[in-house]
Amino acid sequence: MDSVDSNLLLVSIKPQFAESIFRGEKTIELRKSAPTKAGKDSYMLIYVTAPVKKVWGICRIESIIKETPKELWEKYGQKTGITKSEFNDYYKENKKAFGIEITDVKNFLENSIDLENLRDYFPGFSPPQTYGYLNSELIGNSPLKELIS
Image (cartoon, rainbow, N blue to C red; front, side, top):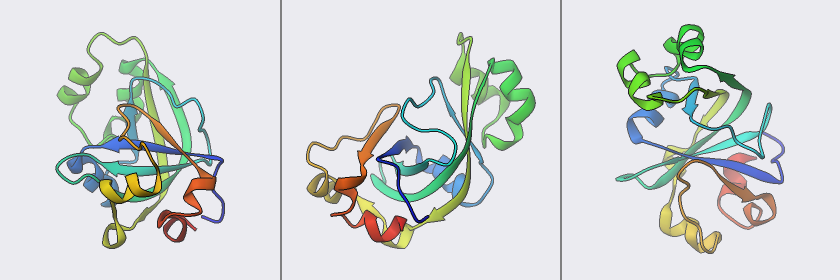
């Protein structure tokens, strides 16, 4: 991971799904919309939601998948880390489903960065509901620099 996009994608993920990513069981992160400032070969920071409230790792985006929910489940269901019932509950009435196919997962759990430290380095930082972006210039002055380089 030699370079970082000018805007690094940040996603909030529930602890059980983050653990599944780091075990290699979940390689598709599901979303109801696609990121606007990231695509193939961009990097994605994994922020783990409460009660953890820490950045646990980073991965590379292999592709952004756009399908109907039915097609996405048929093609990638086994890579989503959830059951068909959970998948259906998540997408309910949605006509479009997005998946972020991830690879090159790097776990820095031992050096995770908690929410308070993130706010010290990124003033006004708030964990994203859907997507967030961190500017690479600010990353250069934070503990993230060593972890993602």
